[in-house]
Image (tube, rainbow, N blue to C red; front, side):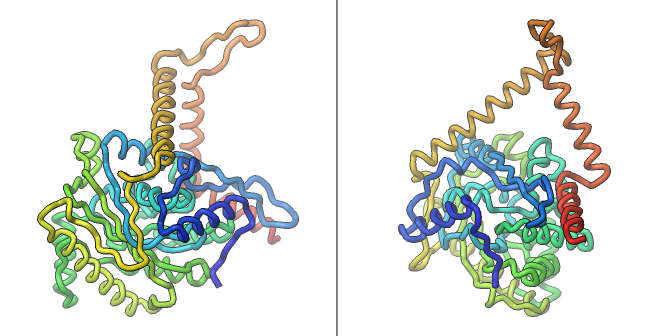
Length: 404
């Protein structure tokens, strides 16, 4: 039996929203809560009737990135296929065409159901943990950072699933089985792998790596924490922008990003590693056929993923005005925050006198707060390895204390 928790008002609201979207033939969702991002849980206390009391911290970080991409770079998103259920724990697998795929993924979730932004986790390379601001936010939200060291990464997977199940929350975890984005060098390595193993060469994909996927899937099965696997194919009908340098420095952005989602029952997925390898390779070969059909269209505007009966289509260019309004609000909110922070950090001294002096002689400005943040963050990174490991350690300690 898959773990399900419906004891919170947020879960009930999400379920009602999911049922509404499912029963209305994939009507475009509308929710002001879409600017809220994810959940990162902080253990506050241990009670006699439960292991711990979590406090859910929501952040509009993903919505700010999404708003920036769609409003500034004018990127449009089209999603086709089946609806992701925010109430069910699942693995989401996707081909990794560029280094920016995971950023566009949030826009795809928003188009299907804004609540998905609050229940989605992503496995990313460890270097992204060092991004100023965003890296700390993703770590605090318990994203999984991979070192490309299987022993270390298996431990990270285990800790994440322990934490997710222990906190009683159902998440959809995005994993890139290819392990890296498609480049000339990785394409060559994938072709060598195909030749060595008697597989058909792939033009639009890299052959997936199964070890990490098998470990994560096995761990989630053992914890009864998975109901489906969602297979997402990402395609770029007009242009492909490969990296952050192309996007931020050069100002190049893809005109459109397309996603196609297929829902796979967990019962149909093999358990043994060898059988799972064959299953995943066949899935990637089917994905290659889908992408061949997609890119075979000469006119870029005609490049669309085919849909079958019962599947839906969601487009950012046809979203409701309320959804668009949320993105505009999020964008200007964070723009204001950045301007205020920049002003205080550059134009105001480290200590500012505030009248009347008799009541409040002085107070630290944002520089002191920022220095405090970096000091605490550095200590946490040194002793625990980051805010994500710190939260897990404190949660684990509280659980052991309760058991004893």
